[in-house]
Image 1 (cartoon, one colour):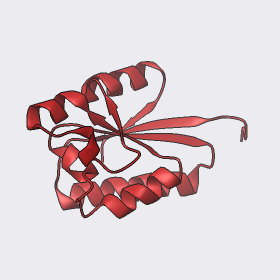
Image 2 (spheres, one colour):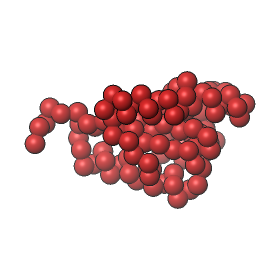
Image 3 (cartoon, one colour):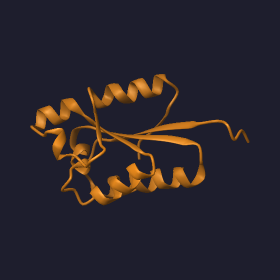
Image 4 (cartoon, one colour):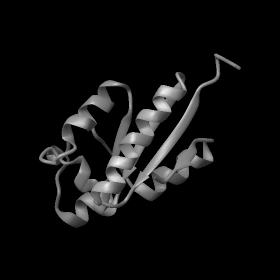
Length: 116
């Protein structure tokens, strides 16, 4: 096994369904437990951005994952369409110009694509 290798995975979240969001968090935690050298980004767009809101029931879990090095990114197109400012997102959540574009860029850069 190559201990020097860095693995990279981008997770897709476009739903606000509790089961789907909790599955995503479980997948992220399981991946982190299995592979030590892993970069993880969760990209949310459409209804998925609601999970990244400060007042979301998931905000504490997101805080913990951010502290553990997971990057969360919200789609600016979705935020604009829904009239949501980035200040309403959990601290530490980044914005990207397009959620779909971010996923495509990551895949072209060799990131594994995960859709829970």
